[in-house]
Image (spheres, rainbow, N blue to C red):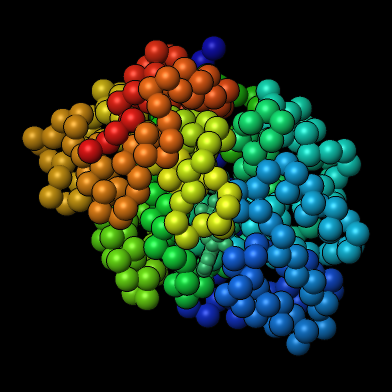
Length: 423
Ligand SMILES: NC(=O)c1ccc[n+]([C@@H]2O[C@H](COP(=O)([O-])OP(=O)(O)OC[C@H]3O[C@@H](n4cnc5c(N)ncnc54)[C@H](O)[C@@H]3O)[C@@H](O)[C@H]2O)c1
Ligand SMILES: [Zn+2]
C-alpha cells in the first residue's frame, strides 16, 4: 500500500452574526420552499426562538410547522418519533433545526428518513447498524444552533443512542451536512451556565482532538469511492482548530461566568464554528471514543440546567472527562502540537519548557474553573466499571483509528483509571 497524498475539505454555506437568524425566512424563500418543518426541543422552544424563526416564514408565503419533541441527547426511539411526526404531518420541502446538537441531529435523521427508504438501522454506522449510504438526495436543511458547541450545523454526522444496545453511535454521510448554517451568537445568551460549560468543552475537545489527530499522509492511499469525511489532521483543518483554541483561551471562562457577555458569546460561537470546520474534516479520537460509553452507561447522574428527571452525562461533559489523560497519552506522537495547543489555550503555558503534563494541566485548570465534574467518579463510575467502559470505547473503532498512536485496551483502561478523579 502506498501512502495517502490527498485530503478533502467540506463545509456548508455559512451565515454568521447578530441578527443572522432573522433572515431564515428569506433564505428559505430563495430555495423555493413552501412547507417547512422547524425541529427543536422543549427547552429551546421555551425561549421563543423557534417560533420567532417560524413566524418569519409566513411573510414569504411559507407554511411552517414546529416540532418541539426532540430529545436532549437523542435516541433511536426519540428520532423515530420525530420521523413519524414528519411523515404524518408532511411532506415538507425543507427543514430548519433551531437548537443545540440534539435538535440539529434529530433534523438530520428526519431529513434522511423522509427522503430515503428503509429504517434508521440501515444507515447507522457499522458494526451497530448496516452503514448504508443514502440512495436519494435529501431536502435542504438550514441549521440554526442555539448552543456554542457541537458544530453539528457544519458536520456530516448525526449522533444517537441505540437504547437496546446501550451504545451511542452515529450516521455519517456527506449528504447529511446542512445546506446552510445560520450562526447567530445572540441566540446563545440564554444557555444556562452548565450548558455553556459542557457545550464549550465539546468545542475544546473537537479542536484539540482534530489538531492532534493522525496526519492524513500516514493513512493508506484510498480509492475515490473509499474517501470518508474524516481524513486526519491536515493543513486546512489545522488552521481552523488553532483559531478555535485561541478564541476559547480568550473567552470560555468569561462566557460561563457572565452569560450576557456578548463579546464572549460571539467568540464562543465563532470557536464552535471553526472547530466544527476542523474536526468535521480531520476527525476526533480518544476523548470522543471514551465519551460515548461514559454517556451511554450513565446510572443516576443528573446535571444541573438539563431536563430534570433524566440521568445523563451531557455530550460535552462526557468527552471532556478523559481528555487530560488522553492528551498525556498522545503527547509523544507530536510534542510540539500538544505544547502549541496548550499555549493557544493559555499563553502563559507551553513554550520550550513544556512536558507531557502541560496540556493536561491547562485543560484541568479550565474544567475546575467552569465547574465541570471532577472526573468520571463524580458522574457515578467506580474503578470496577473501567473494563465495561473500555469495552464501550473499543466499539468506536472509526474514532480510535484517528488516534496519532496505536491505542490498546490496556492503554484505554489506564486512561479511564487516571480519569476517576482529575484534581
Ligand atoms: N452531529 C455532530 O457533529 C455532533 C457533534 C458533537 C455532538 N453532537 C451531539 O449533540 C448533542 C449535544 O448538543 P448540545 O451540546 O448542543 O446541547 P443540546 O442540544 O443537547 O441542548 C442542551 C440543553 O440546553 C438547552 N438549550 C440549548 N440552547 C439553549 C438556549 N439558547 N437557551 C436555553 N436553553 C438552551 C436544551 O433545551 C437542552 O436542555 C449530543 O447528542 C451530542 O452527541 C453532535
Ligand atoms: Zn463532540
